Image (cartoon, rainbow, N blue to C red; front, side, top):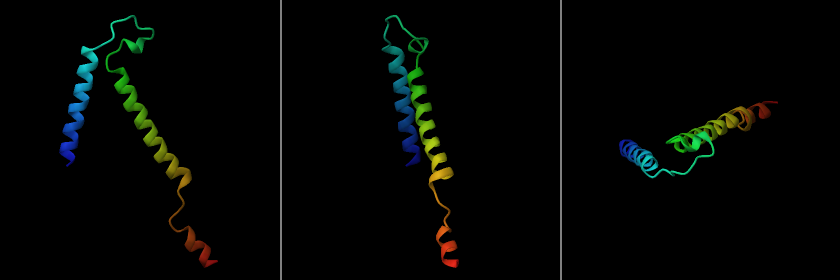
Length: 76
């Protein structure tokens, strides 16, 4: 199952890179990143990783309680 998912992800990433290079917009780019191939893909992956890792950190640092918080109240 993991191998199939990795193969599918590699094929999708490869196809995305090839299609972005082949079907590039040939107009005048306004910003430097619009002329860089695969920038949107890398930026999207980095953004997703930042959101997931940030949410995990926030959950561990602030949102989750200790697993023994009710035992302390009963002992008092």
